[in-house]
Length: 98
Image 1 (cartoon, rainbow, N blue to C red):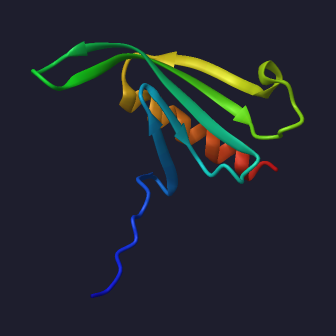
Image 2 (cartoon, rainbow, N blue to C red; image 1 turned 45 degrees about the vertical axis):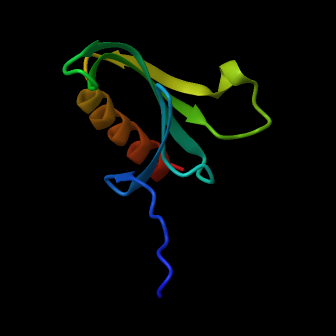
Image 3 (cartoon, helix red, strand yellow; image 1 turned 180 degrees about the horizontal axis):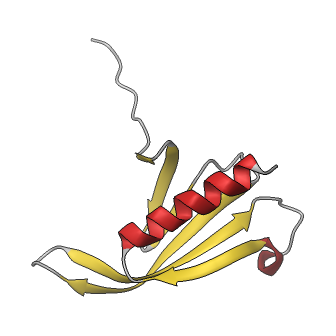
């Protein structure tokens, strides 16, 4: 039987890693990543919730920087879709300008 490899979830060519209410967007080996944190959500169904407030941060991945110096840009959006759309623009521009 052929082995199956588990492919990571991607959005517009960049990987997504989720842990609870935090989503990392981008390759950890690149100079920049996006950190999305769902700060508020509402229940839609018995087991489904919808994000109503998402914090977005473009972060430098340099391990020599202090945590507060890693944040390059930050914003807040009212939906996960709007946050992901902005995150993609920020990440694409940051990685193309290096």
